[in-house]
Amino acid sequence: MDTSHQNNEFEKGRGAQLNTPNRFHATAYAIEHPEAIDDWEKEKTPTQYFLESGKTVLNKIESPDLNMEYSLNPYQGCEHGCVYCYARNSHEYWGFSAGKDFESKIVIKKKAPELLREMFSSKRWKVSPISLSGNTDPYQPIERKLELTRKILEICLEYKNPIGIITKNALILRDLDILKELAQKDLVSVFVSVTSMDEDLRRKLEPRTSAYTQRIRVIKELSEAGIYCGVMNAPIIPGINDTHMYEVLRQASLAGAKTAGYTVVRLNGAIGAIFKNWLEHTFPDRAQKVLNLIADCHGGKLNDSRFKVRMSGEGNYADMIKQQFNLYRKQFNLDQDRFQFNLNEFVRMKPGQLRLF
Image (cartoon, rainbow, N blue to C red; front, side, top):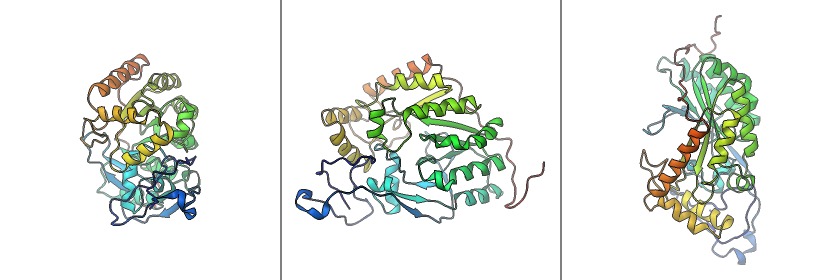
């Protein structure tokens, strides 16, 4: 497993620049002296896909600081390559690294729509909003071909089960027809993640995502179609994009967003080494300052898993971020009431049963 921090060549199109060791593996291999070994010459990392055939599709959310009860992830790993992504650590459960593997070895849950239909048809299911996807983006590039997310939305519409979506990919507009129908009965809300409006930063921070202007367009088109839409300005990375929130919230508001949220970056598990390496490649002049500011938001550490404070941080710098965000949120009328999912429309059907009108 490549754990090298030594090669200064930056691979464009990838967020992580190394593979960190998998904590569940007893052994790993590393490049100790890459300049002396011709066989280790750096090549572009191809994307590979792996099929998963599990028997369950919904994950019960136990975290008390999250609003949804269930999440559904049709994909594990994410080709978007956001270097800060908290979901990277979960890739180790699949036997992969949280680094380059996370964005180049994508696990596909091809049976997800079928399993969801079975769940909705079961008497054990009590109607509840589902978060799509909660871990990795349901509209990452492979979705264009496989359409697992679209099939999931079709099943939610068929059974009238509410669903919440968060994405940073303009591919969501492909499914505008289904989203409109869901919205007519208050069965869907969408949050679009917008980290900054600096396109040069996006290419470094989130290399395979939709452009920021495209994400603002998504908010506009969803809002004009009557779909409740908010903006997620996350994560806030002190010293990188903490001064960008004003413009993000301003443009999101002009596009029709109804609400806004944020989180402060936290570097749990392998993400610490991945992010540090990225910082040293990308912003060497301020790498240590950024790390110090992140630590200032988490009690002197880069990571924090405590419920209630892990998302927003604590301390002077975290308080300043919170105050600024709330000020802009109010200024741009993004503090409207939280969307209420309609739980009264759900219709249970047996697999293969046709709905009667």
